[in-house]
Image 1 (tube, rainbow, N blue to C red):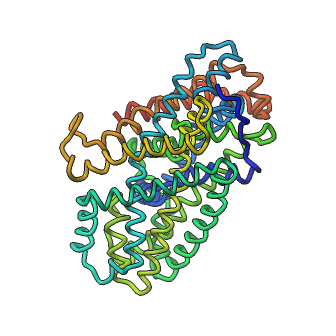
Image 2 (tube, rainbow, N blue to C red; image 1 turned 135 degrees about the vertical axis):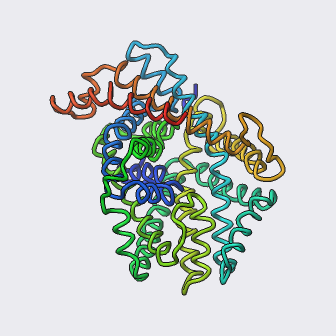
Image 3 (tube, helix red, strand yellow; image 1 turned 30 degrees about the vertical axis):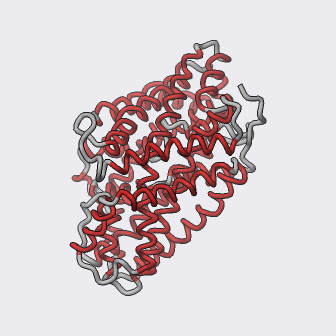
Length: 446
């Protein structure tokens, strides 16, 4: 074990920005707004917020609490917290699962980050200008079919991530989120402002916020459950790692509430930026990831000021990808830094190069290694399915069961500052509601 001094966040605000930055990723920019509009607008938002309160928030707080008590990487933290509570150190498996999950996700997430960089460059060079849907589709397919291009994008993106994380918690993570998060906010405000000028902003507002209760089905509730779990970076060791840099003075429940609100507001603002453009250009809403890389570039290429808007949008996407990617690398780096003789910089380099190398296999699955390797899936899709359908829900389930059933109730109530009534609700939610919710997410995704 390393005796290196454990880093700390410089302030509660820095921690909130970092946690929100981790939560705000590519999924917030395209997936959440699309899910909202497709699943009943405000009705879906209300169900989603209920799911966040009953599943996302309890697991988020539990991960922070374990990290803060353990003051170490996720594996060591949960093992030492378990030992102090008179429980088995075998709970370390939950922490290891989170770290491995973060590592695997980063490997293919960086590939998508590379796409975002490539499209930012295309915005600057005017590659979308005057193109029809076939040409824009050919641009996207051409990128996927070009292993050298994908490798360059993936490598540049991973270099940025390694460069930030290697600088440490205060200079690296905090420095990045203090710059990137306000810039992300400004870009969103500008894009929403543009949305207001399209003549279709009211349509977008109605699409997102007009409740359509008839659109709510068992399937959409499951979608809300699933997104409530994944949007907050749960089950990846990230929030345990971030919690380990927290002082005792931070109120975990209040801070979690702030992060959840900021995450949701940014996701809805992204909808108000994207959908007026989609409606104004009569584009297909139902195109999932293609909305970002095919549908919107078509609009940017055929509208006044489209070059500038496209640049702003893909910068927004890149910033969101970066703040998430640095958080994915952090638990792996913290583990290496504390469990090996490696310095912070060397730990980052080793972890980053490992994820980069696996990412090469993922990007090659779009072209030269396109044949399925397992269960009919290529490497990219296999990594995605393995993490999202198995590792993250099971790790999250492990965290909430450990915190709710194996830690001392009284010390939990004191640490979270709960009243008698609040303690009763907390125990009901963490012992029964949240675990059942995660099990439902897990089973339904299978």
